[in-house]
Image (tube, rainbow, N blue to C red):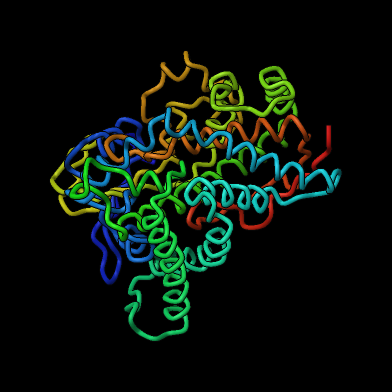
Length: 414
C-alpha cells in the first residue's frame, strides 16, 4: 500500500487490464460521492445485468434515474419498518426449529442463509413466497457460480454456445424468470392490495404512463433478492461468529436484548434502542464487508490522492482494505463494537466505513438489511448462547464474501 493509499497496475501485454486501486477514505469519497465521473461499467456488472436483469444495481444513466425515482419511495425508513414483523416472525420460526437441537452444533452460514431467503421472499411475494422461495433457492447458487466464473474468465465463451454450463445457466435463468413473470401477471390481474413489495412495485409511479413495466418489475425483484439475501446473510453470519468468539461482547449484546425486548416480539421501534447490537453489526461489517471490492470506470481524467486516473480505466475501491486501514482504525484487526459510538463515528472520515457503497448509488436497501440483522440477532441471543467451534475462518468471494467451509457454533438454550 502506497503512502497515498492508491495503487496502480501499469500497461501489461496480453489479456490483462490496467486498474487503479484506491484505498483511502478520502479517495473513496471522491469516487462514490460524485454524481458524474464514474460509472458502474465493467465485466462483473455486465454479467449481473445479463443474468439477473437491468435492475437498480446495474442500470445506468436515464434508466437508473427513472428506476430510482420510482423505487426510492418504497424504501424510506417508514416503509421498510413495516416489514419488521415478518422479519421477527421468520426469526422466531428459526429459533423454534433450533429448540429441538439444543446443545448441538449448527452451521451458522446455512441457518442464516435459509432465514434471509424466507424473509426476502415473504417481503417480496407475500402469499406466493413459498413457491418463489423454492425456485429461487434452487437456482440462485448455480447462477451465482456461473456469473462469477464468467466474470473472472479472461475470455468468457458466448452465452449462446450450447455448452453444458451455458445450457444449465439458461435453464435456471428461465425458470426464475418464468415464476416471477407468472406471479407478477397474476398479481396484476387480481389487483391485490397486499402490502408486499411486489404489490408496491406494481403501483409505483404517478400514472399508467409512469409505471414500471412487468419486465422492469421482474428485474427489480431478482436484483433485490440478490442484494438483500446474500449480503444480509453474510453480515449476520460474521456477526454471530464474532460474538461467539468474544463472550464478553456476546453477553453485553444479550443483556441489551433482554432489557429492551423483555418477553415480547420486537418491532421496528426497538431498532434504535438496540444500539450495542447495531454497533456489533457495524463492526462485523467493518472486518468482513459483504462486498470486499467495489469497481467503477472513470469517464474523465481525475486526480485522486495525487494520482491521475485516466478516462476509461477501472477504479477498484476496497472496503476490506479501507476498513482495516490503521490511519482510521487503531488496532484494526481487533473486534471492538465501541468503535461505532456516535462520538467515534463523527470523528472519522465519512468513507472510512462504506460496506453499502455511498453517494448517489448507495445501496437502497441498507436500512432493510440492518433492521433485519439487528432484530434477528436480538431474538436469537434472547433464546440461545452461541459457543464457537470454528475459530479460524478461511474466506472466499462468491456473490458475497463467504467462508470456505462451515461456520459452526454450538447453540445452548438459555
